[in-house]
Amino acid sequence: MAQLAERSAVAPERVLALVDAQCVPPHSYEVRGVAIFASTFGEYPASLPARRYYHPSLVAWVKRAEALARRHPLAEVARRVREDFEAVFEEALAGCEPPWPGGVDHAWSYLMDGTWGLCLEAISAEALLQKEFARQTIARLVSTEPDHALSETARTALVEAVEAYDGVTAAFAPHERAESSRRREIEAAIEKYGLAPALGAGSEPLPSAS
View 1 (spheres, rainbow, N blue to C red):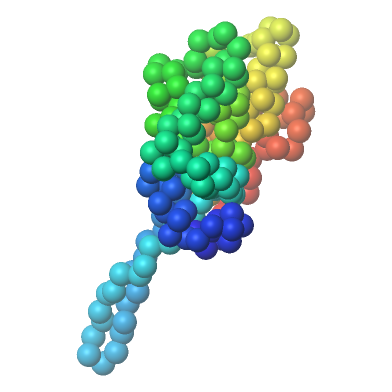
View 2 (cartoon, rainbow, N blue to C red):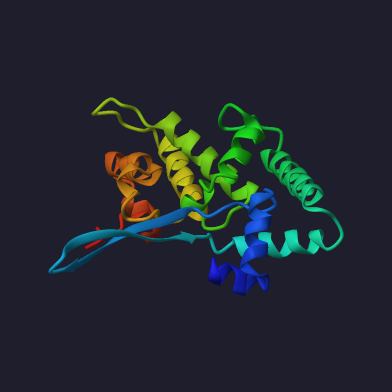
C-alpha cells in the first residue's frame, strides 16, 4: 500500500477510499502471520498486522480516479470508471463473443476482487481478453488423447495462442503456480506437443522456489 500511495502521489487513506468505492481494483494478495513469543513463562502466539500487495499497474488507475474525483463524487467516479472499462472491453472484443459466460460483468467481478492482478502484466480489458481468448484457443486445439498429433495448421495456431498468452501474463506466484492456467494449460500443451523449440524463453517453466 505504501508504495502504491507514494507512486500515485495520493495518501494511503485516499487510496483505500478509492478502492472501497470501486474506482480502483483492490489488492491481489494479503499476507498474514503469527509471531510466537517464547520465554520461561511459555509460548504465546500473537497475530501480526496483515500486509496487502497491490499490482504495479494500479498506479495509473489511482491517478486517473483521483483526477476524476477532483470534479465528481466517488460514486460518479466509479460509474465512469466502469463505463470506460465496458467501452474498452467491447472495442477489444471486435465483434466476437466473450471467451466465457457473463461477458463484461464476469470480467468486472474478477477486476474488483483482485483476480486479474494475479496473472496479468498490466490490468486492462485488452490484456485480460487476450489472455482468455488464448486460453480458449488452446483448450480447443489440445486433445486429451495421449497420442494426439496436430496438423501443421493447428500447430501454428497453438504456438500463436501460447505466444499471445505469454504476451500479457505474469509468471504467477511460486505458491500458486501449480494450480495456475500457465502450468495446467500452457506448459502442459508445450510439453505434450513439443512446442518449446518454436517458442521463446518466456514460455519455459520457472525454477521452483527454494
